Image (cartoon, rainbow, N blue to C red; front, top):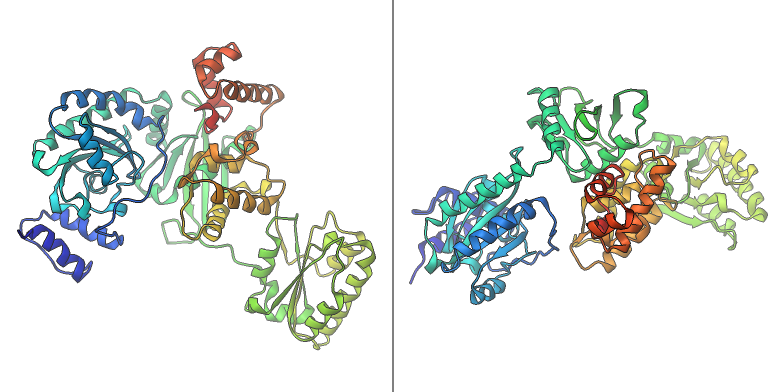
Length: 572
C-alpha cells in the first residue's frame, strides 16, 4: 500500500532543499523540519550513531527524575515510553514498563546516550520540538528517518526559569498505540518539570537575573555570568559560547579587582572589547559584561585573526635577510615564524633544529641560503658552546650578502633570549625580534582557540569534543611545556578516550587538580588540597568527604564552589 507522506518526503529529498514542494496533508512544521534535515545531510535510512555518556547529576535530569517516575506508573499499560533529552538532543533518561518495547527501542538506538537532535537523526519529537520551540506531534512517515516510521511521538521543549531551552520531553510508542491526546499529556509533563526547575533555582540565579535587568538595555550587548551560568540579552547572544564562557570566567577571576570594580578586556584574535563589572550582590560574586565591536558600524562581534607583523615582507627580508622570533620553548615560535614569511611558499622552507648533542650542518644551511631557499633555524638558545662561533659567522655572512643584494633568501631564527648564550643574544639583538611569543600560562585566554585548532589537526574526523569542565581545567593548568605540552595531552586523549566528549575525569590527575587562577592565600590553598584528598578518599561521595573533613555537607558544597572545585569530577 502506498504511503503519500513517505512519497512526499522522498520527492523533496530527490528535488533538493529549495524545491517548491507543498505536499497535501503534511503539516508545514513537518516540511520545514524535513528541509532542515536535508540541509544537515541527514541519512534517512541510518540509525543514530552519535553516542556520549549521560551526566547523571545534571540539573535537568535531577529535576525531571521524580516527574518521569510518577508518570511512568500512570502510563504503565499504554504501550508508551517517556524520553528526556538534553539541549544537545542526547537522550538522558528513558522510562517504560514494557520490556519488549525496550528491546524494540534499543534496535533503533532510542536509548540513553544516543543523539536524537534534528541535525543527527532528522525530524523527530525530541529534536524538532527544541528547534521549533513548541510542542509537536509526529507520527509514522512524518519522521525523516525510515527506522522511526513505525513510531509516533509527542514532544515539548523544557525551559529554564530564564526562558532558555534546557532539553525536551517526549511520549512515544508504536504507531498502533498512538493517540493525539499524547500531546496534552506531554505538555503537562514538561510543565511539571519546569515547575521543579523553578522551585530548585539557586538564589545565585535570581541574583544573575536581577543584575541583567539592572544593567541591560535593548541595544547594548550584555551578558551576566558566574562560573556555572550565564544570561544574555538578545544583542549579547552572538558574543558567547561554551568556550568563551570558560575563557572569560578564567580571565575575570585572574584579574586583580582590588584596584576597582570595573575592567576593560580586549578579546584575543577579535575586534571585540569587553567592559566588565564585578557585582558582589547575591550569594557570591558574579560579573556583568558589555561587549563592543571596535570595527565601527558593524554592531556585532566579528572575529578577526590578529594581523601578522609585516617584518617578513619581501622588502623587509631583502633588506636584512634575518627574522628573529623570541619566546619560551613550546610557545608556538615555529608557527609564528612561518606566519611571518608573508607571500613566501612554505615548501621553500628548510627547517633545522639546533641541538646541544648533535652537530648542526652549518655548511648545508649556508648553501641553502645561497641557493635562495629560506631556512628556519629552531631552538638557537640550546646551541652547544663550540658551535656559537659558527652561528655568528653564518648570521654575519648572510646579513652582509642580503644587504649587498646578493641573496633574496631569509634566515628565520627562533630563540629563548633568557636562555641563550650572551654572544648569541648580542648578535640577534641587532635586528631586534620580528615577533615575540608568550608562555601559555601568561595568556590562558588562548587555550580554547588552541584546543579547537589542535583537535581539528589531531582528530580530523571530529570524533571528540571537550566538555566545559575539562576546558576549564586546561585553562587553570600552568603549562610549563607550553603549547607542545598541550598538543601532547590532546593527542593522548584522542587516542585513549573512547567517549565522544572528553570529560574532566579523562584528564591526567595533575590537570584535574589544577588550582584556580584566582589569587588564593596559603590557608585557602591548604583547604583546597584537603577537600580534594577527602573527595578522592570518599570516591566522590560528598557526605562521606564532609565527615572526613569534620564539616557539614552544605558547608562542603559552599567551599567547593568558592574554591573553584565545581568542575573537579572526583567530587561529582
